[in-house]
Image 1 (cartoon, rainbow, N blue to C red):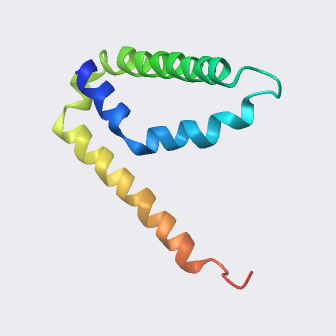
Image 2 (cartoon, rainbow, N blue to C red):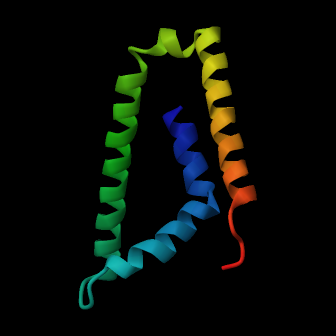
Length: 97
């Protein structure tokens, strides 16, 4: 799974576009661009690994609840209501500005 995800990200042009457009603005003038960009990418990788590790750590204990059909149905209905609410808000908002 790790290898497949890594390959998918490396071949995804959006990932390259993100790093090419977002990271350079944080590189200070006079710094080694290559080294500093790799450091920023490494920090991003570390934060991503921490985030996904946290998601896994939280989702494993509640796996039984998350796979329960009644819970999934309730969650789908609640999400649908939120989307309908957003749509109604958008439809009734003032677009004159």
